[in-house]
Length: 181
Image 1 (cartoon, rainbow, N blue to C red):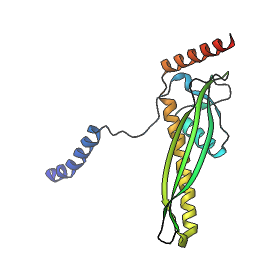
Image 2 (cartoon, rainbow, N blue to C red; image 1 turned 180 degrees about the vertical axis):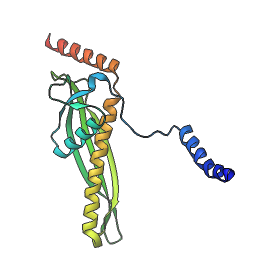
Image 3 (tube, rainbow, N blue to C red; image 1 turned 90 degrees about the horizontal axis):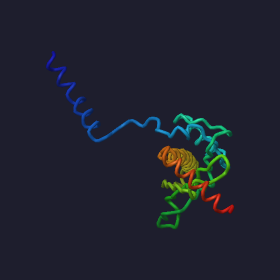
Image 4 (spheres, helix red, strand yellow; image 1 turned 30 degrees about the vertical axis):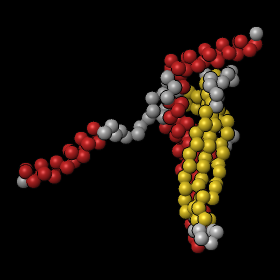
């Protein structure tokens, strides 16, 4: 019985070693610079704002208007483009593209770097015979795309170390002082 149990356990051990060896890790909270643990947020798109707040809070960031740094969502654009036509000239595939432009600034409004842009696309098949289902699929894809954009903004913010943040802040202040003189 013991030998049979070992044979059953062997594939699980091999699978675990393979996953560990290839660097697989479960996605958890991101490491955030302590200075960015509290952020103010400015966004004009209500739905994206909700998704972004959820991602920020999930990763241990408090959204507060009194924070030292502000995450500013400058724009969120959605584009729906026809990409494939059937033989009869009927659209059969669409590409949905979401683009978010964002920046990080001090509480005083000094931009720490030029606006960054994240663009993501998804495609789906449109069926005129199932127009309601196709419309529902499009809505679902837009929702997922918006959430993925929010996660990618969070990833880029989390990539800023304390040292980089200090350098960016000092450079922004020096540039503002040079303009004033």
